[in-house]
Length: 236
Image (cartoon, rainbow, N blue to C red):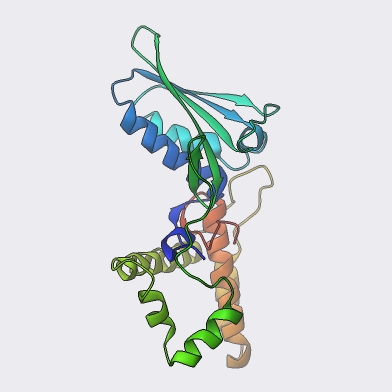
């Protein structure tokens, strides 16, 4: 199993592959080509086919256009061999002369890779299933946090503390917001109404309904493009 810091990633919904990955790629390209006057981003395959619904273009433009004029080109019928979620970033100077491009892929969970990347996960845990971890720690008299601490870097707990804060904030924000979610379905937010109803139920049912309202709150925040935590994806 890979690091907890790879499993829990902080970013904006509604999709770790269609929004979080493109945002990260945009930030990296902007840093690399900070002298450019204009950018063009071409979306291929799945990113182009479902990008509008996942707000891929909005995510990229919000990162780049405050710094440089940026255009988006859609190529939904072009599937690149390395991965279906391909993006090509191009930089141009003030005279429109091409400077440099970067072909990069959003490979899931907010991760990005180019054709020189090795997609194999970096496993720091020797176990992949809870059914393996449970007997292992019990046999050695260890707690779960000790099991994690032996394998992670020392900054893991600070990172998880930030993850926990973002998770809590996404619940609070989701319960406070109302109105219609982005997209063409005109779906109204329901988390707040579920939370209010739960308060009137008897205790045996209240906790279950409150948990449902919290889960719905995060789901609606994710759907609106707000900050959430992958677990290990936005969909999860």
